[in-house]
Length: 448
Ligand code: UD1
Ligand code: CA
Image (cartoon, rainbow, N blue to C red; front, side):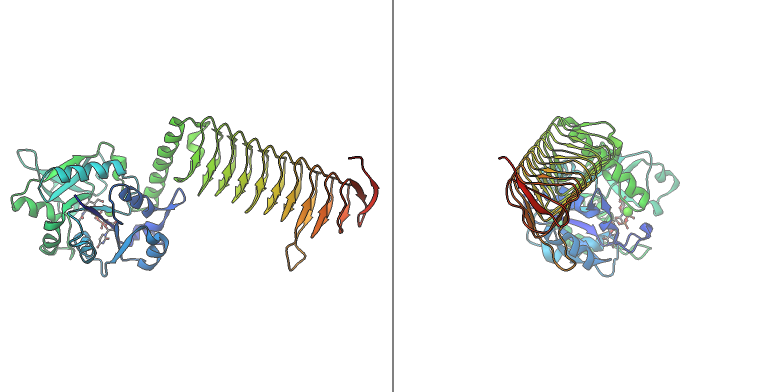
């Protein structure tokens, strides 16, 4: 049966006390709404419809083409919100899944079970329920003598006896489209001036339909985020979920609670993560690596058997058997080939270090190409910026750059050439020669 989805995201989220719309608050590097979209997109074949209202333009801009959008203005309740999807969806599907952008822990598996159950019977309403000690303001589920759901009662309207019910409404449903669009228009206005989606349950029962429900075993899945406290709780749960998955896939974590892995990161088996490791964005790490303590890797690809100690990497490419740190900084376009060694306090930007190149101590390489097995002495600096423009430095294979050499770009050091300590290189140095001084001059040829 053709299944579509509506994701509600129009509310302001006043309790966040923020100028940012609630659903854009980040959780492990992704806007909260991203998680609901991901889970939903795994279950339906089409693009979900997101109902936007507060901060609509900003939400659409951030979430982009991952969703279609329908504007709800003003926001007259959850029933009114779903109705805004009618022009987009009417006639295009038989089942409509309804979920929330502020429920980031709900899994695709649960949504998929809900959709399967909805398909298996012909009643118009199939829903999730959850049993939890803490009601968190959720609506209560009422059941008749036979045990079928008969209505949902909102907390504000519940009697003291009803408040004691611990079976709750997460607010996630799968509706028959043919029934839904017309039923939504028949929802009465609540005393608070809203159209409650929950009224559909009672309406279906009155019409003689049986409601079917699935109990969500893990109440954490349906945590809705209303405050920054909830945001932090959900963040910790997502972190645990992701870390658990990687540990079961063969990654060791010395302290999972201080290890953060964003959802799109991948890791190879037998990699060990030390505390304070933060792997961000489009980062992919190979197997047999040791990362951290205190290492941030963002949008970077790291090969196998690398050691990254107390370092920061952004937009870099690191091949196999590289070891670096402590306190290295790889910036955009840094490329370290197989077996590169980078000792403490090195910075590399938009530069390639060839296989086996070494850069042991206190150096900066910007816009440079370093040949295989070259040695960059302590304190070497590429003076790549002349105040207006960036210039390139090329260091040949097997070159030996003496300590504290300044390479005033554009400049080339030939293969097998050497510079003396403290040299200021302003002109190209031919291969296999030794240059010393300020400015550096070639003083002799070297044996090949
Ligand atoms: C709703 C349910 C309640 C359930 C709870 C679970 C109703 C009437 N009640 O209550 O039974 O236990 O969710 O979280 O449905 N939204 C819109 N447009 C609106 C109103 C809300 O898009 O006009 C969105 C909000 O952004 C939010 C979600 O719908 O993401 C839920 O709205 P909220 O007002 O928080 O409903 P609850 O009172 O939590
Ligand atoms: Ca809510």
